[in-house]
Image 1 (cartoon, rainbow, N blue to C red):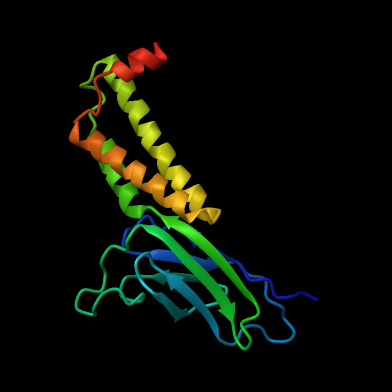
Image 2: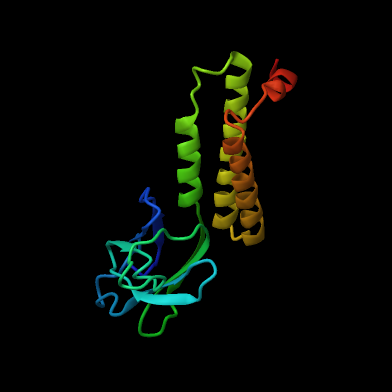
Length: 188
């Protein structure tokens, strides 16, 4: 006989305005499973919001469903940062699963735009290589922020995110983001 084992997965939606969470739980068939499933979502800078959660399904949350916007403007980008998720089932809430995730959709969109605007054909070889080094370093910090949040290292996740954002701003503000010197010094 199967026992209840709750699990959730955050699924990339590749959209700054949506948060996708799917139920990956194992439910017993006898007795009947979940009666009142809920998910608690704590958005950075806001209080926890408890919402209905459809078991064995893909659930989409927006700024409107999370109570961050008015019905007049229901689909604003969700903030980046560490989200705390808690999926539980009624009646006793003894069965629950918690996750912390680093949402980076806005930073990733900024990174993608910088990458797509970079004309790699216009730079000389050293500058082209420097831009690749800079972008790789920025992406490394983004990945580190995600990994830290996934392991509940919230302070470290926020530091890595802030560093990636700062480096990306510097890259964008300096056109190619380089002089080629870093590549020449470190990789020649």
